[in-house]
Image (cartoon, rainbow over all chains, first blue to last red; front, side, top):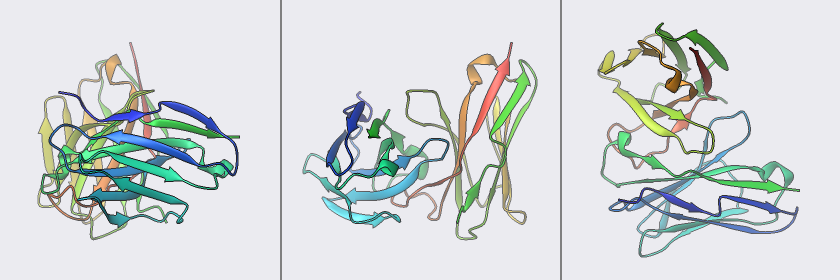
Length: 114
Length: 115
């Protein structure tokens, strides 16, 4: 049973560029959340997708957008990249009506903005 | 505003001894608390959780204590093993038993268990 898979694992982008990160949730899960973990910080909630719609959003600018596909996989898009966007981006999958302690995280995508 | 705080960035303990990791929160709406463990180059993995209706939850070597009046929780690891060396995150949710809510994380405590 595959867990949460994310791609790419590492990437380097230039300021002003755009990036797309991808996530496949754990089998059977229908909800995908994205978190940003800056160096030395804990993960910060970006947004959550369920039934192909953004259900909740954290305190992140509109440059951060996402999408969920019918197969529950998801993308995170960041436009007009800033140096401060350099971080580990974590995808978490869960079941919409499942318990909180069954949220599974992927290994993350390391984004470096230069 | 940091709603979940882990004031100790690092902790070092001897193998076999007890490790105590602390976490404080400020949001009274939090009703479910979780501890995650994170190794380098891996995503956080769920360790143990506690609902606000309890004050203790135990799972093998891991016990979490919750003091609601003090808005404080702690994770006890007994006995500590070298394989426990990792970063531990405290997280909180404002909706019990629903993964529909977001998790609010602390900044983490790096635990080093010395052989």
